[in-house]
Length: 621
Image 1: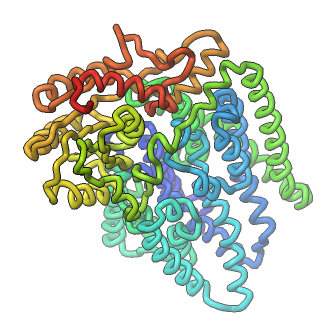
Image 2 (image 1 turned 180 degrees about the horizontal axis):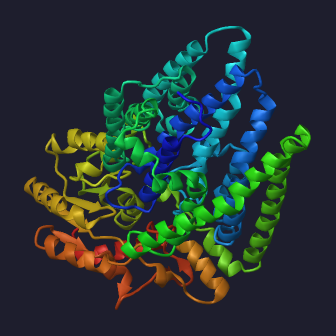
Image 3 (image 1 turned 45 degrees about the vertical axis):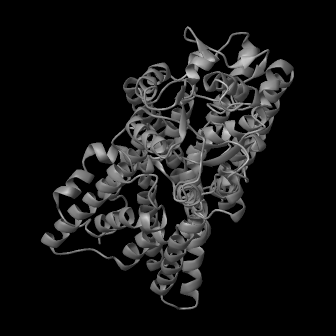
């Protein structure tokens, strides 16, 4: 394979990767698997970096410190600019007392450790706002690869062993480790570099061995197959698939097939090297960095599923990415090339770490200033102290949130039947868990059973995670297959309009078992964290919350009501409980009713349960 400094087809492949990630993050409805763009990047990185190392080793001019310095100057300036502006914009929106993970993620991003940080800190009960630096996890993985991979290659060369043996060992250990760990600890397989190393190794093996198909007919067929595989994964993969592990095989394979067929003059390579694709390849790094903070900022206040907003997000992201490429990436690289021969290595090598430390100092000062503003306004600050109560959800007791698929034996007590009183099963996703404790406090003489799990909508199996499927099997084995007496089933979840037909079927099936069914309709929810908005409203003396209430919930409630009132025993409208004449309450006597975008405080659950009690007409008393 000829050693060209820039391979246009690879740039086009980068363009495909970043386009898929961008379209996925703006929630374009037909891009279900755009997240595999990161896997494409990993394979490309392994390929490109190994080509560079191989060429310099072959010319006897590979210098490890020079390699690291080049990587610093290539990667860090655009990252620093992204972190700087993200801190400026989001700092006032994420005060430390509300969301300390944002600030720690800035520091971890600056020093190439964000993937490790997010692995240890991300959990289900986050603030309800997407972290605008979450996407830097993949940069952390890449930077760790750039750090250790050249060291391993040099170590093997020094003991005169085969580089291919090194690649083979890394590939096998990493791949099978990823496959196994994806089933036992999906977050580890996703974020940690040793479970992603096989993807880099795939590109490295191709580059080190110069693997290239020479026969035109075969090469053209392979390149077509590679692109088709990538398009299938980008369009049809879903977040619910087993991923990464086995789920990463197809995007890695598709990328590899395109890389080994770079030399042919196929129509596919023609597509990859056209100006449109290479333009996106050129700006791919800057576009990747800037797009997610933009999506997060707009998504805090507006529905990004709106077509106009989606298109605007795409245009805005591409424009900002292009400007950062022109104003940051290119000038910095030009400066480095001009000064790399004249400035001492110590100066070049220390420049980026010093910038990182200076930027860290700025962030510390900015945090102090922003928090000072909030602390001087205690009425605003009190809302920031609102958070999800684990006890309210019966977390680690009866609310199944783990990504693993095994239930602790102690969970069985959550489904124990009483022979002395009425039995009520409260079931659904986190919204059902949110209200169960208040049900128990309100009706102390009733035995409440709880079957709650993340994404668990009874009867709607297509939306279930592995944990939801496990919970459903337990519910069936302990309750429905034993034909025990359940007096009332309460179903509450984060409903979508598409859920309605299957929900109706499930209600009919439950009633045929002889149980009454109470369905709680679509929740009243908001685009962003309600306590944060309440605090900001206090600061500016203007109520922001009504302006970010999610649209369409009243219409969805009417749709659910019309279908379910004649089917379910009871239908409770959350919209009616919280809203009058399109005005919805979000606080009561200056006490907040929400803990995030949709979950309720104890006071909020009391508002809802009070309305439910009216519908039951004394049934549970």
